[in-house]
Amino acid sequence: MSVNIRLGVNVDHVATLRNARGGPHPDPLTVAKACAAAGADGITIHLREDRRHIRDADAVAICGWAGVPVNFEMAATDEMAGIACKLRPHGVCIVPERRTEITTEGGLDVVGQRATLAPVIARLNAAGIAVSLFIDPDPAQVRASAEVGAAVVELHTGAYANGKPGELQRLAAAAALAAEVGLECHAGHGLTFDNVAPIAALPEIRELNIGHFLMGEALLTGLPAAIHEMQRLMDAARKV
View 1 (cartoon, rainbow, N blue to C red):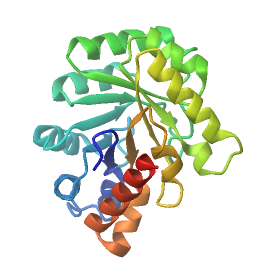
View 2: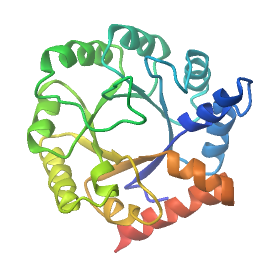
View 3: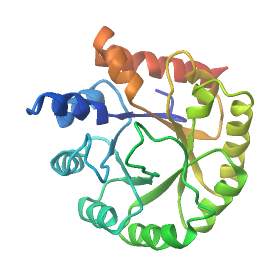
View 4: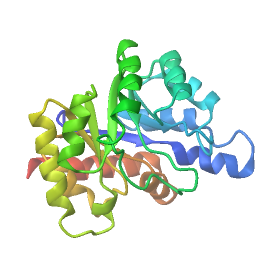
């Protein structure tokens, strides 16, 4: 795996599958360990306010294990900030949440939510936790992310994955701006074997976080094979 770009694997949908039956199997921690053994550079979990997939016990177990860096996705609430400060993951990614959404539908409005985000970010920074903000590739949102104290932005690639014209150019410009204002740049949402290469080729992007596609592909080829192929495609794009 290239030292210049990392692959974080989101295991939320392992919990989705487990919760459909109500028992303990499949276990997100066991799958997180398998991802790390297969070469994943990090694990992402999203402890939603409604606990629809990852649950508190999963977060405790995975953050307690931390065999690779854990990226803890959460809403900007006092409850979640308290949980994060207790669990001390490697990093926190603050994401928007709406109870009716199937999956995250867009980025945070950092510009309009400065007053809410700034104290949460300050609390996490004081606990030694690197803070990322999940944003759309918009220049104003990138600049505001730096101004409120984030160390990282994760660019929402959903519109790109859905084929929206001009979105790759917007992502490239946002990634370049993030580097210019001193932010580490990550990206994710909707990325697959077919569309990952142009995103991985953007030189400022240091990490891709991918979950749903890899879990689905693993049903066909196995988890190590799915992770290895994604890493191969990311590396190949970086070398062009």
